[in-house]
Amino acid sequence: MAKRKIGILGGMGPEATVLMMQRIIAGTDASDDCDHVPLIVDNNTQVPSRIDALVHEAGEDPGVVLAEMARGLSAAGAEALIMPCNTAHHYAPQIIEASDVPFLNMVELTARKIASEVASGALVGILASPAVRKTGLFERTLAEVGLQAVYLSEDATLLRIIQDVKAHGPSAASRASLTFAAEELVEMGAAALLVACTEFSLQSREIEAAVPITDSLDVVVQAALQFAQS
Image 1 (cartoon, rainbow, N blue to C red):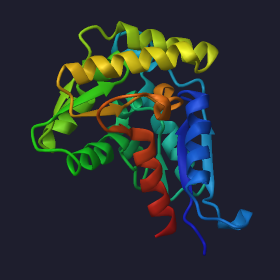
Image 2 (image 1 turned 90 degrees about the vertical axis):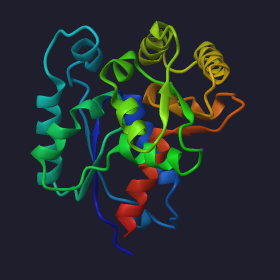
Image 3 (image 1 turned 90 degrees about the horizontal axis):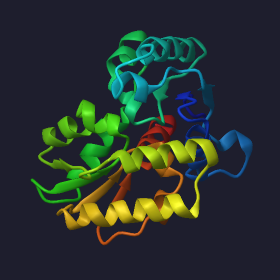
Image 4 (image 1 turned 180 degrees about the vertical axis):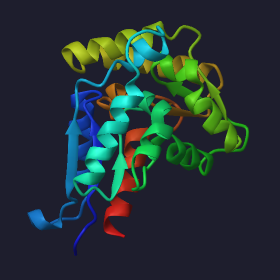
């Protein structure tokens, strides 16, 4: 059965982009190459820093580059677009405006999934870049589906984990730090946890917690698979 082509706005970071591709491949029922989803990937490691733009309010506008990538992927034949970087979804309006193909929004899809699994008004603990908290990216979207976002009292630790993973890859130390952060969020009343950083997705299945954990990368991968095979 022919499958529709998926375009990936990647490079943020490159390991997260490869992880997204791996999970699409692993999620496909295939007996030969032609059974897999065609992927068109722009692994653009030169997208300006989202942390610099959103946290430090310095540097170039990532949205301009992301819009260019969306246009390029669409011109190359992509029939839908996805992006592994949660923080970069702050620029979703620019991506949507730049292309005439659907953008499968990881933030919106994840909020709806969690809302279907927990009670209305529940607290959702966010494991993400400080930029996600500053922009209110998930906070607004979760509120729209009747949920409340809760963050660590000190999220500089999460930024250090992100920077360490980008520099050295996932490690036992980063996994332990993520588990500790997850435990703190549960103690703060979180009924569910949301992994909303693709550097954390590299170890999301190893995080230990007393409540359900949803990885936004898995959610958008499932949406991409459904789109490609529809």
